[in-house]
Image (cartoon, rainbow, N blue to C red):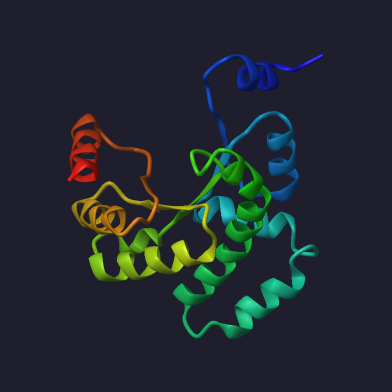
Amino acid sequence: ERNYLQWLAAETPTAWWHDSGDPAELGEALANGAVGVTTNPVLSAAALKANRERWRGEIRAAVDGATTPGAKAEALTRIVVTDAAKRLEHVYRATGGAQGYVCAQVNPSLAGDRAAMEDMARRFDAWAPNIAVKLPATSAGLDVMERCVADGITTTITVSFTVPQVLAAGKRFQA
C-alpha cells in the first residue's frame, strides 16, 4: 500500500522536493517520491551536526583546509550538497535534467556582492551536474542569476520574495 507522498508522486503531475540534506531523511524522501532537495546554511549545518561520525574525515579536512570562516562554511556546505547530489544523480539522469537537483545557497552575507556571489555560483556549479545555485531575490542576486543562466548554470531564487520580485526574476530569466 502506498502512502500519500508515493501516491502524489505516481498519480499526479506534482514533483516534490525535500527540504534537508540529512542523508537519512533524504533516503526516506527519495523512497517516497522526492525528485529534488533544497539546502541552505541552516539545513546544511543541521545535517552536518546530525552526521558528524559519518562525515568525520570530510569535516576535519574542510575545517583544516579553510583559511577564512567563509571558506570553512563553503567547504562544509559542499559535504552535504555533494552527498545529496550523488543520491539524486539517478533522478537527474533519468529525467534528462528536468529533476534531480540539489539547491545550494550562496552565502547570505553576500546578498549585495555581485562578484562574490557569481564566483561562488560558478564554484557550486562545478561540484556536480545537478546543482541548482540558490541566489537571493536582491538586485545583485538577479544580476548574477541572469549571467549564470546565460552561461548554462542552473539557478533558483530563494524564498521570501514578493510578487514584484518573482516577476523581476522571471523577466531576468527570459532575458
